[in-house]
Image 1 (cartoon, helix red, strand yellow):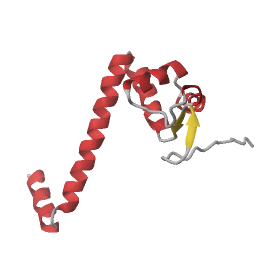
Image 2 (spheres, rainbow, N blue to C red):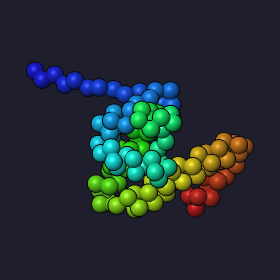
Image 3 (cartoon, rainbow, N blue to C red):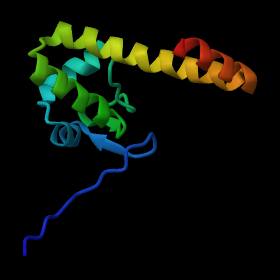
Length: 117
């Protein structure tokens, strides 16, 4: 019988982690994470440069950056463009969901019929 030990991290705005922990959980090097900070993709919650802490939800962004880098062999600038486009897509999807929520129910049905034609 093989036992696997799994460590879970709560990804939210309240929990904080260090740059080293962010590197450990994301698979990026600390220098690569510093590049993401310079690009504005992740931001420390503190202003103390030696003890910067980051919200744990940035782990998702850092992992996405690592996958994009590995899968598409992107350099720093290409990675910045890709992350910016993904963020824009998420924002537009959220706006669309908000707009759909404000529509009366009969319009949802009518829009669905027009799309299927």
